[in-house]
Image (cartoon, rainbow, N blue to C red):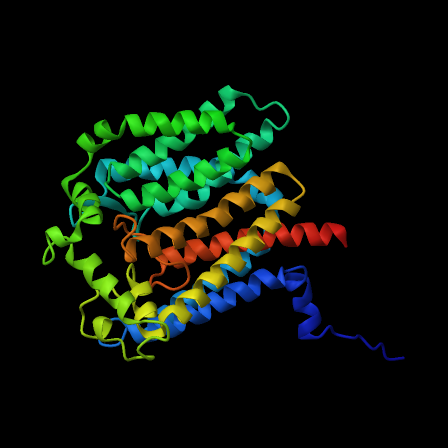
Length: 371
């Protein structure tokens, strides 16, 4: 008698790995990735970098996303402290014997050159979410102070490199965790007043190039051929796009190399010039939907750790998008912050995909429990 063994199909074998994924969040992600590919293909025309390089980065990022989405939030909580400790240790090592490039000590050669500050973009919210989870129901003002100290250590090390853009992003990720953990508005107001009062002192400790960026925000025309050139040209590109844009692959400012870093920090200017107000609104609405869905996932998460982690990571995307579009349009100082899923780059894209994978993991764990 022959025994017939039914082998599961490929679809049946893959189903446990993809079931429970949040489809609205994935659709928003794919929309942003599609916009990024379209804009970058144009921005990379005439550049020494090939569009295929970004496709390779994208494939690696999607692999990171899919892998992290399989990790349950409980496992993420277990690695929070080790990852934070490793990140701080690497930052200390970078300060001691890191590589110096363009006057900044931001990289560490461990056989492979890495930028340890990128680790803290994820390690910071993980650590603080873990900290508040351990004190759920017993959170006191002192706990917020300890959380602030945990945040200040890596931020201070990153600012020392100096890397103001990354320091600001890491600071925002930690701040959002502390805020969503229930920090009083009175404390926030007092902190804002103290920060304003300390502004003259902070100005004294800032590097010359950082001061110049702030001064150029106030009056870029004071040095139109020097430090004000970048912001002036990006604003011209945005304005020349009008409502409908100049047409795909027909942006003059970008393709004649007037817009600096047109494929990285200033890629939004390329989008605005070629696609106009319509393209800008489409991109902004895609971000709004993505961020709104992330906050919804946070609101439905079953544990304090998951809620704080999902909310803070979602707000990372908001910070990235708001700061990048703000600096390109001239309402914020120019800092090195890429446009999420649109700017060229491997490390930043992998970090953003990792964050999206965590959101999918949190949403997936809730759906699997409900089913």
